Amino acid sequence: MLRQAQHERGGGIRAFLHSEAAGGIVLMAAAACAMLVANLPGLSAQYFHLLHLETGPVISPRYGPMTVHLWINDAAMALFFLLVGLEIKREFVDGRLASWKRRRLPVLAAAAGMAVPGAVFLFVTRGHGALGNGWAIPAATDIAFAIGVLAILGKRAPASLKLFLTTVAIVDDLGAVAIIALFYTAELDLVALAAGGGVLLAMAALNRSGSKRLAFFLPLACLLWYFVFRSGVHATIAGVAAALTIPITRSPAAPDDAESPLHRLEHGLHPWSAFLIVPLFGFANAGVSLAGMSPAILLAPLPLGIALGLFLGKQIGIFGSIWIAHRTGFAPRPGWASWPQVYGVSLLAGIGFTMSLFIGGLAFPGNALLADEVKIGVLAGSLLSAVAGYLVLRLAPRRRVLAVRLLARRRA
Image 1: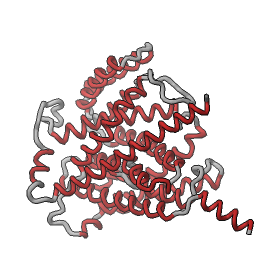
Image 2: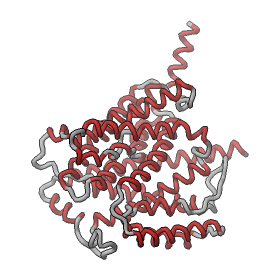
Image 3: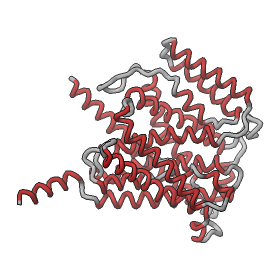
Image 4: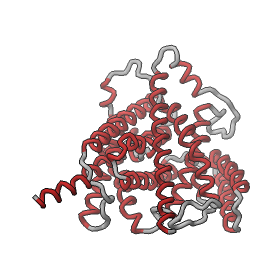
């Protein structure tokens, strides 16, 4: 029975990775459409006009009337961050990060994979003080895009690497949320912040009381978003905070518990996030008009720092930390993965599309020129990482193949 349960859980993981892969492919298509529409003479003006169209109401005097872009980036993306928070809680309470032994390598790799890109960015942009605020842009990994590339590779990448990349991305998301909360928060409205804290405490008390009805939690989550949006803390943080109060029923060595509120909400949100919210965000934020730009823009400090941070910083940080951990005995590299395959996945971690664009919008608000340079840097670094990672994994011999060849040589 235990073996059957483990097999069923493995099937659930494969289904999750498949849906992530499909979402990544949809996201790629949305980004490509955004670039196309933003550069077509007949549609470009309409595209940018639609994004900045005022729809109302005025939720916060800080932002004025709500626009299409604000609804997507601050409201719809709060649902994406709610899903991120649910995944983080599930992994730490009842998943691959439930024990320190399992956490060691992903946490180390994610930490190095955020610190080194930031250092590369700061080195490239040194002497341009105003650009330093964008240090966190290349620190994030877009799991949907990366898994989408792995899906194209099929069996060329072992399942252990796919699970490792997913786990690293979850820890990476946790770091990105902390960065947004600590470094990209405007002046605070303490009254609104206190009200939001009160709502969060009410949700935590509801959890401790044993309530498992999502109908009680979700209206409070909406109220929490409202107060956080008004407070000056970025509204998407409300999604993560709300997720941490959602009750979870543990189900070790078994499929997700059908009665667990967290699992039910996660499974309900996932298709909407993968196939609507994230692609919509990509379409609304990837479009940049290339009119009047020359290839030399890629060598400007901001896009160059982002591109090199994603491409060089990620691979150095992640691959280097895995190699050191393996050599020192701190943690072994993912099972059945050769070093070239580990390097290929480290390259794929440089695809920072969704979260990088999101942080870029927070780093340079209201500056259209820098916003376009951020998009160019993110697109260039992510595309370079995707192509290089794909080629390395496509050409890398699999570890089992290497083992068979080595055994054959020894017998000969």
